[in-house]
Structures are given as C-alpha cells and as structure tokens.
Length: 115
Length: 107
Image (cartoon, rainbow over all chains, first blue to last red; front, side, top):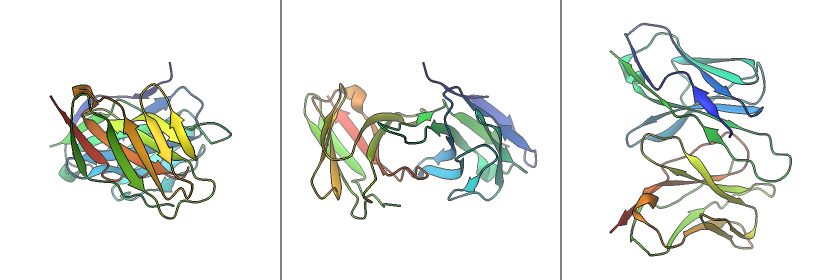
C-alpha cells in the first residue's frame, strides 16, 4: 500500500519558533509538494520539488523554506513561526509521467497551531 | 499551465447522477485531465484521469469531448458519503487545486 507520511498530525508551536514539518514517501516518486489549506481558501501551493536537491517556489512561499536531501523526504521549514501560519499543511508526492496515469498521493495532514 | 474553471458548489440528492463540468480552454496537446476528491480534514485523493473520449472506473466516469476544452466528471447514483470537494487539474506541472466544486448530497 502506497504511503505518504507526515511526521505529526497535530502540532502546537510558539511565535518565533523554527518549525520543521517532515514528509516521507515510500513510492520512489520524483515529485513532491507542500500545501496549506485554510477555510474558504482551498489548497495553496507553498513549494514543490521535482528531484533531489531541487526546489521551486509555489504561490505562497513567503515565510517558508524547504529541504530535499533525499528522494523520499521533503521537509517544510517555518523559519520563524507566526500566528498567520496556523493552518492545515498537506504533503503530496507524484511520479514522473512515463506512460499511463500519474496520480498524486497525499499525507494525512498536519494541523499546526502557532500561539 | 492550463487554467481550469468549475462551479463553486452543487447540490444533489441520494441516488441521482451528478455531473461536474470543468472548463480548460488552453489545454496543451500532451495534457491529461485528472480529478481528485477531498473530504474534510483529509488530503485529496485521486478519482480518475483521462486524455480523450471516455474513461470509466469503479467510482466515476470522465467524459472529454473531441476539442478537449472541457471535461465532465460523472458520479452515478450518489450517496451521502459522496459529499466532498471535487477538483479538476490539467497537465503534469505543479498541481494547483483552486477552489474545486463543493458537492452536497442530501437525503
């Protein structure tokens, strides 16, 4: 059974802390993505990566950074957490298209609260 | 990257067939069309993907006309558990989900 695992389901951090959200996939997928989801705003793309050590900014990268040192792991870093980063964070992985379908798989999400 | 447009919300009743149409006027030649479903507090999950004409699986059907500028997700005989947000995506670039279509199935 394919799996994308996020390190925490719920997380509470203080303003100003450096926060690491970890995502690991066991499907040898090339592409990985980080999103945040807020009520009424849908899924918004923060960063994505198409390969190891590669990263691209999504639509809302401000206040975040990422790391992809190994193919299976894609980490989202909040450099200095702020209350407006309280949200549900979702990680996804997807294979490169060779032939046939390419479906993305999502982790269970991390609900982060910054106080 | 092809932009998609789909209705914000739809209501249906149990047992009815639901059709959600997505418009993607600037779809590229090599782009596939993919639909995802999302329940509250969960990540989206893949429903169906197609390139042209019709694709059917155990969950849904996907209809794509010859010009490929739109696609229609068809859910046969919906139940209350089909209440969810449905997203249409086009292409293999970075996945941008937009607002999706919030389907509410009523008893």
